[in-house]
Image: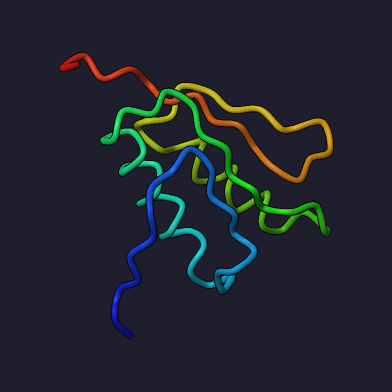
Length: 88
């Protein structure tokens, strides 16, 4: 399958992506968002039974560009504070 280009904005909604692609997608999204200069992004994973949320949080726990993160009150999305880029 060919790679899909998606615009890097301050929010990404994971609903339109196959669950098997989410981990790699989130990792690359965070890298590109940091590279683009965003200090905070939002990842919409949905509420459901929490599987996508767990996948997203496991990536955030170990991603080098993530400073911290927190759930939205409805737990359907996660806000991510990215580390500042010292080269900027």
